[in-house]
Image: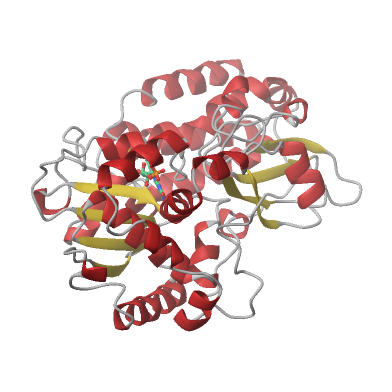
Length: 434
Ligand SMILES: Cc1cc2nc3c(=O)[nH]c(=O)nc-3n(C[C@H](O)[C@H](O)[C@H](O)COP(=O)(O)O)c2cc1C
Ligand code: SF4
């Protein structure tokens, strides 16, 4: 597999524009700018690229929903909000190779005929945003941005926008409100942003990793892209591993690599004397997978075979020194804090879920609390305004099924007898050097 997103990471500093171009950077634009947009879009659609922000929706299909006669201005919004506990892939590209992001933004904006691109960055990635801003200025000075780019008659501006810093800002419509200067509450859908987004104009929102793949697919071709994946998947992905492993970190690997290979080969396996009891495959808002699921390929269709989802590919490993219920409480602590507060089932329901879980840890729970907890999840799950609360409940609902006996043990033992200590979500999230 060719490294794509991490191909320049071995350099001691992020490449400046001259170094980046010497390393082959921006060459893809020769085969993109000036070419018929319809053909480029068809190539992207046929490549099988799927959005890397967590849902895995076909990127080409999403872009094809933009009407050919859509009114201008058209906006591209690059989602680099990345606040999902356990996920730290996007920040690697931001801090280590900002020109790769800009190349992706130019190529994508050309296809979409976007007039302006916003790169929306998690508030804590302040230094990364400064580096990206400097790279944007270099690209502008080199004539890659601005007016009549490469005599194509097409203009593009890039705006680097630092988030005020809430998890919900990553939800695409809350993000649009944040850019417009409003409180970051999600908007009702439809209308979808592609029809009516920023200031009522057509707006395409994509994860930054998705955008970075675009120029490579168009430059090197579909066959090349599809050969980068494995076990039936296409392309590469930056997997991240946190928790009690010998070599935690991020690894760009073929999409479809098994969880076993990621955890035991690349992340070095569990710490000495520890035993794997499960893992979240793609950040905090995904469902638990168990040791028996280790050979499942980590691509969009792999984890769903055991009721989970790939999410961001940020694997959080759990070992036998950890009580899964304590871990779920820790996750709920994060989600209750990050609820935007707009709808009651999420704002008031999630703290109730956390309270119910705590009863098992402290020994106050009896058998009726298992039913109460399930009922609560079932009521909240389909009744919230956005996907935040259903995401928050994914580890809880799956944890109740996959660690069911543990809930009973906690009742029988009048509380948690596990000598565990859960790392805080900040620690899981690899604290950022701002
Ligand atoms: C609560 C919540 C938080 C989200 N946070 C992010 C995020 O930080 N980054 C991201 O790319 N997508 C995030 N998403 C998904 C976005 O709404 C959107 O689907 C995504 O940016 C689309 O990009 P893609 O098609 O390239 O995956 C979040 C969704 C929800 C419901
Ligand atoms: S589900 Fe939560 S985050 Fe989403 S709108 Fe309701 S309160 Fe806000």
